[in-house]
Amino acid sequence: MALSDFTRRGFMAGLSATSLTTLISSAFSTTARAGLTVVEKDVRPVQAGTADKTWLEINGKIYGAKPDKTGPIGGGEGYKHAISKGDFEPRDAESLIDALAQVKKGQVIFIPAETEIDLTTLIYVEKLILNIPEGVTLAGDRGHQGSKGALLTSDALETPVMMRILGPDVRITGLRIQGPNPKRYVDHHTRAFAKDGKGRDYYYKFPVSSCIQTNYDRLEVDNCDLSAFTRALMLDKGNGHHIHHCFIHKCQYKGLGYGITHDHSSSLIEYNLLDSNRHSIAGTGRPGCGYIARHNVELGTSLSHCFDMHGGRDRKDGTTIAGTNIEIYNNTFRSTERAVGIRGVPEEKCVIYNNWIVKQPDAKKAVLAEEKTSVYDNVYGESPSKPG
Image 1 (tube, rainbow, N blue to C red):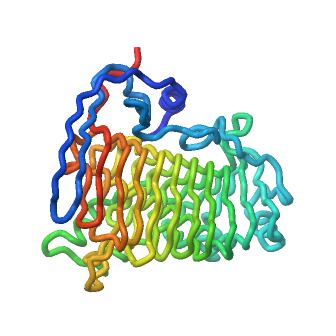
Image 2 (cartoon, one colour; image 1 turned 45 degrees about the vertical axis):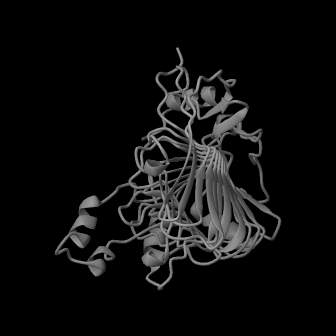
């Protein structure tokens, strides 16, 4: 679902609206399903006027995603921490590559407003990867004085990594980065994996694309518009990553479409708009893998469950481990697909609470999980009408 200017204005108006006086019906129940603890406070909004909101206040408690003082969910116009100048100001691919070769820790490479840099030929012919050194900020000015932000693109279907992080404390901010693959390719997946299909080797002959990859601590990606990659953000290693106020969308290649992935890593993911991904957030589930996801909005289109953590059965490592710690709270899910899939048993815990899950009637429909996952105090149900 493309987010038009009209729709975005509607979201921003809803985000800044005051809380509604909400009539609710509540019922408390506790159920156990394959070790899953579901302590369900079945709270349902029943009044008109909430369809464009991303959060509700019920009895003094916030359910769903509410913006913070930094700016709107998804970033853009109104974002308070936009950058508008730098130590280097490249305007084409060659000057950007040159700046990355000279930049020092603590410096800023700023790509001026709405500059467009097409990296397709360099990636295809020279296997270009933009290497971002430790402590460097790569910035555009998305949202500043109406700017859409500089645009980096690759149309090469085989874009293994567009940006590689070379050390800790890198920041990527205020950019639009567009990959080559916004499609689902469901037919290709079916030919590979259907009964009597052609198999994994056939499936992986089709190239994949990735935007940003890191093995180091404390990567910050904020106020960016990331789209059309097989995997937008690959947090392979490192801790303390912070992904916030971004719009991450159209990463939906069947079987491999991810907005944000974790391997041996952990992160805080907050205040993002997410749409048309296979899984917007995912993890391999290896020990140490985990994330906190809060105040994010799934706009409505998803190829599979929105937030994910793989288990041992997916890795085929003889365990049931599905990460270490996972916290999912104060998110708004508008997708008709399942909100969360925890495909095994976390080493410590997974907690899912204070979310507004619009298209599912209860926890059993909204969450797939096993032991050590607790689902409680969420809002379920569709708003009956939009504001008049």
